[in-house]
Image (tube, rainbow over all chains, first blue to last red; front, side, top):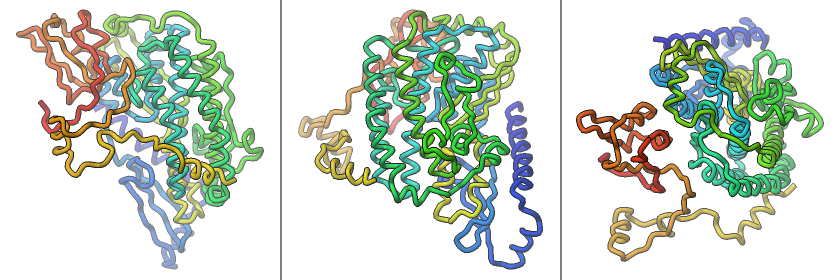
Length: 404
Length: 125
């Protein structure tokens, strides 16, 4: 029942969001009627199965010739009921459920849930665990951005770049496997710390990985940013203006590529980011000017790979000694959480933007409520202004440019 | 400017990165190939070794188990089921999500992770 309410609330926000966009885009009823009378435009819908992005959404395009005149979005095509399942499980079990919300950014979801529960139960995380959490999250960011660079190249029809970036991504996956015990699903954060330590022998391996990404960074920039074909396909395509990004509450690299200096690591530092002073990267720092197009989004994500490499290197060199978890026995953690009451939130910067988890505990073993907001949900509306006046051939890359 | 063209030319003279597992050439029938491997007629191309601490298939030592049921409380996938009459557990590999939380919680080390990762099968048992 609770899950159903969450679902309806989601729908409600979508409806409001859409109304706001319609007025913002200046699309009046007259214009729509004109199209209907003239008969020159028609509507095609793409989705809800795999519409250039692997999420169940349906996009309706009003097409005139080769141009997209208007776009609309229909969400809520799939309901997994994860939040409802979570309200029937204890927090230790939810860790692995949260991990499965998003395959690529799994540490972010688990960490966000952990932070929400820790704030309810007033659990203090040891500093060494904070550093390990940061390193894992940043390794994941490199992995996600490299994957995305490959997908973007694939959507542009440049498959050799895709194979190159995915080959380069293998390095970070292997490192993650050595550190955490699995290539993708890491299972690293737990309530009050992390599950595995980074012993001294693994530091060399992490630094080697970081060095590898720094060494190929120039090559990647050459391939993706100085390539005339990629520039022709992405410059001036899918423009999201700064005002639109702010009005539609875009998050993560999508917002930053439009010149909005928004990054949870900078605005509300968590884990070890308090010691690092991370700054949000906008195209101004990378290219000198902000266009807010697909090219800028590629540039921002590439620059973030280099930024993550720097963060990891700093963390590994300055990692403090000490415990990695506040209480080693999970059963004792559960006993402590049973007495906890209250509400908590955990927000942090995933590779795609801000992840938000809300948890309410009422002294029972299972949480009373759990609400998740994944970054793509915040970013989806910004697809619509990007699609305006786009060519049909550019639809896949624009849809993929928010990194769904 | 011609970053990718240079890289493609360089790649021509490099060994392929992919490890061709289980065979260098795709066999006509995988079943026949595996049968031949079992009889010792053909050889497997070895997989990339998994690292130490890999979370593979869980091994259960029935004689060590004291039936305390802690693993059933932390298992997120209900892959570990307690049999109260026998004071033992039953481990369902097909439900397992390989988080190894049960291995961590077990007080007598009756569960452990192995390096085994080839788990696909036609039968569930």
